[in-house]
Length: 438
Image 1 (tube, rainbow, N blue to C red):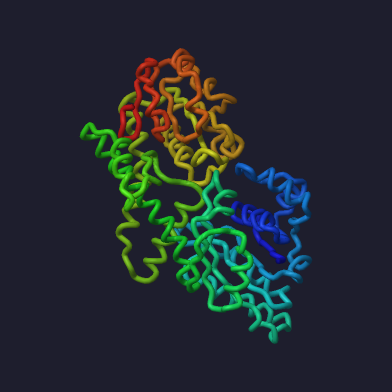
Image 2 (spheres, rainbow, N blue to C red):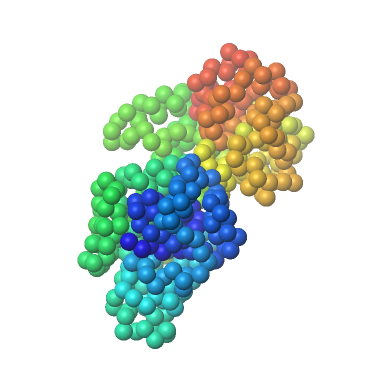
């Protein structure tokens, strides 16, 4: 099948390469000429394990091309997939301007039967608006006789950064929302080689399912963080509590890792958007309000814990390990680590930071506020405390004897409980996790 994917951000590029891997012919379109030029040279524009290798493989097999010109590739498309960003507005609602802009452009050029697939995470009702705009564009272009041959479908993505390619090819489910039997049939063919349960449903159900999934996972994170805060007060260990309740199959162990809160490109904006959707329909989503409040407060609790131990932070040197929102990615969008660094800087602390992948992106946000180093050990030189803010596995492999000897004061505040089982007290450290003392 011939697929056009519009948008080469995280979802668009991973999906485009994934469909190419399945044997389809894919054209990826983006208005950013620099990004398209880089991809055309075989260089991904962000880090994701396996992405570089798959890009090279698919280009060598001539299954994927990159262009800024939608009109040059749309004529043979069986499916036109919209995968542009839907960032949060100041109000919290999803910004759909890019989605609608693409819909207008598709309507301008589409001249044959096709299914428009919305891969972007969008509020309920957006898919139907997209179809309306595509058909309006076709009418304006003098192709009104073809509008009934064009339909829309919602196929939300459930990719996790760090495992996105595996998630695409081995999903827990494929959700397809459509009104038209032909659209269902075509999208079944598109995913024919993926062995996963299908949820064939309405457009509205598919649109809401992505928000519901992320909201539930965010709720689990905020819940275990609240338990961690209580564990600190009563002298319990949240890691043991999480292990205990996670063995209950009704609960499960995933997303029961306490820390400094969720971040990234999806959770914050999607939870905020769902909250706004509920408000738009006059429903007070009290649980979601609490999830957002707990997540925001978790970062301040961590900062206060550092402040309570060290006292006035003005002039104190704090080493930070990790700036990306989680290990395995260079993504710093809505990163709790970045937020915490900014709060500490505002209190007068001197920050020295290391991250395996996210330094360059962090410099654009923090360049005048912190010092960056090329190794984790270099970051702790003369530090009054070490703050672990991202769960990079390599931080567990560092020589903690060396770390202890380099620090002015051997105290660790572990915002991810990454080092909780390493018995760092035996190495001479004072260790504080989230809801655990290690």
